[in-house]
Figure (tube, rainbow, N blue to C red):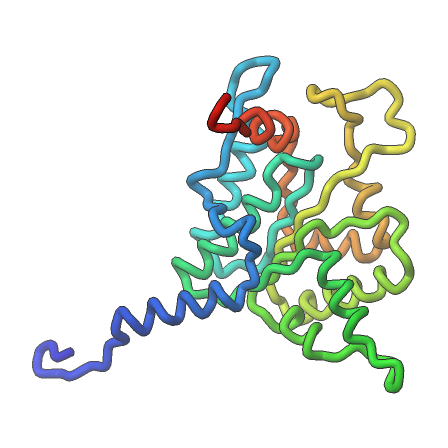
Length: 243
């Protein structure tokens, strides 16, 4: 391109499109979540008031602001019961960062990651191959989906601590979704959905108090509370053509 007698190199649109496609492929977003976007996140109404669910509205707004202001010095920690849309919002953030800002991102289901690390274990050297862990440690933005475990083993705790501490020290942004578990002494206290009121501290402390404290420093907490979308909406929407 030439302007005012000065020639400049300009990246062609086909090159930019190819770059974005490459980022999406390397991002490992499962097909189930390829459609997830901020604009199609369902901020549904509460059954009691008939008003828009404020926690879901606020969660979407935080996700939007995060994308708008990226790069940031913190990530996001989406917490809430099963089926409130944590993964949808987290994936939507990842897609927006790749599509709008060309940011290298990586999606990993926490349990799949642990399985891959275990499968890569070398009994001779007694180490896991870095080919699995290195991208997780190095990617600019990592999404760890469903980071939860009841009574995790020492190996799980150590592996997670290694990942989080490495990204913490390198100031790399991490997005996390985790399903809250109800407290042992919930008693008769329940949410509008009828489920026991979840306990955030107990959920995170499964992985140790030190790691929980570090997550609070690394991520902005985004709490989400609602009925299970899969039960309330998706299940009711399944129909055969003959119905």
